[in-house]
Length: 336
Ligand code: ACO
Image 1 (cartoon, helix red, strand yellow):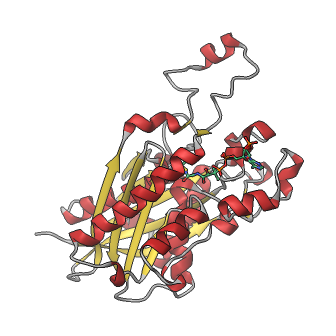
Image 2: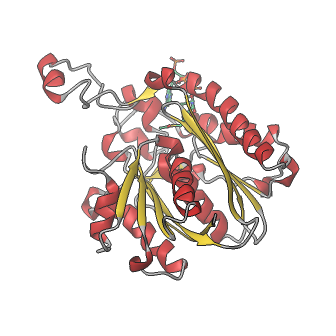
């Protein structure tokens, strides 16, 4: 027997510390005008280290809310999926930390490393586990602590101004309602562009002793690198393809979309997609203005906020889409 999976709980957590575009000027030569014009970002949240927040603990805060809203307890969760590019430790990943911090039974915990499409991939994995009948309730988390690893200088400004910290969580549960819940997911990758958006080292291809031995003050391989315009050009194409692929697989048209939640990479990308699909402002949710790009957390934070604001109704067609480092991209189509 095949089951359906549906989202039964949503939650998010962002650090309290607001960093405006003007605040960034203390570290780098930039301006509110440049950042807003290119990206739409007005401010982002960056962890204040004094609070002790980290990638796992933010995920836990979002997860508590999602589990509670699902009307469940941590004992009801059968499996954890944790998406991040910024784990607290090189290994193990964030999922096991959540299992510990939430004092959960010894359920499985899987980390997904798919950067900006991490939440889309995670939701798809969770959907398969539920559809086969293996698990009933899966906790899916996307969380990022970018601020700890960004270069706060003029040299790093092209990347640093874009990224923010935060976490979101969803509980995906078994459902017997036909035609509702996750209708499809489509996932893609094109690894030949891995180096266009990446963090080179420390990793086994470029380990700490090598970096230290070179003693090169200009070495910034331990900061993220992004070929911005190249990524932008691919993003607009792949976003569109993933959405069309998802709609076609379900025999749906762009007119059927009630709510599109695009990964919050750049407001200009979201606006391009909105125009291409001729969607009204009510049918697209953006919050990059307030949070910047929170990578694996972005789609789930936006979905949670849209739902909290009453913008997602029973029976709505909700489309999630993301593109990012890898390159990886994909879409998830949900009948709410
Ligand atoms: N403030 C002021 N000036 C800046 C800043 C800044 N923060 N950053 C760069 N500049 C300058 C550059 O030095 C350059 O100056 P120059 O012309 O004198 O050399 C000029 O502004 C233009 O820089 P570009 O990098 O060409 O700017 P661009 O218009 O491409 O915008 C941006 C950069 C916003 C990053 C854009 O390319 C973009 O959004 N790309 C896509 C990002 C994306 O989708 N990422 C995928 C998800 S992320 C993930 O997966 C982890």
